[in-house]
Length: 210
Image (cartoon, rainbow, N blue to C red):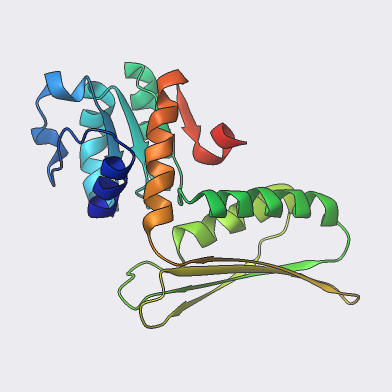
C-alpha cells in the first residue's frame, strides 16, 4: 500500500516528505508539517500512535486491528489536538457501499430480513474476516439490530470482494463491491489527507465524505 500511496501522491501533484518503516524516526519538525498516512500492522500502529498523535500535523489511519484500544487512540489524538481520519477501507466505492447498506438496514429493520456477509480475498491476506466485513457487520448491527453471519474465503490474487445479502421469504436483495486493485484504497487515503486541512478531532472516513 505504501508504494501505491506514493504513486497517487506523485500523480496528484503532492510532495512525499518521507517514506519510512519506522515512523518514530521522523524528525519532529518535519512531522509537524506533514500528514501521516499509516498502512502498517496492528502491532506497529499500537506502538506508533502516541508518536503520530503528538508530533504530526494530522493523520490518516488505514491500519485495522486496534478496536480494543480505540478509546485510548482517540484520546491521544484529541489530547494533542491532532486531526485524524480512520476507516477499515478508504475506497470511495466501498464507502458508497457502506452508505447504501446503512439506508437498506433502516428500511428493512424488523421486516423479517436476514443479513449475511461474504468476503473473498487473496491467499496472502492474514486476517479473517476482513476489516471491511467487520465494519459491514457493525453497521448492520447498529442500524438493523441483527448480527449477520460472515463467511471468509481466500482465493488466488483477488484484491477484495465483499457481498451482503438481505433475504426473506419474499425476496432477496444483494449488494457487492469488487476491488480491481489497491489503487482505490490509496486514492481515498490521499483524499482523506486533503480533508484533514479543514477538520478538528477524530472522524471516520464515511462521516466526512457524506
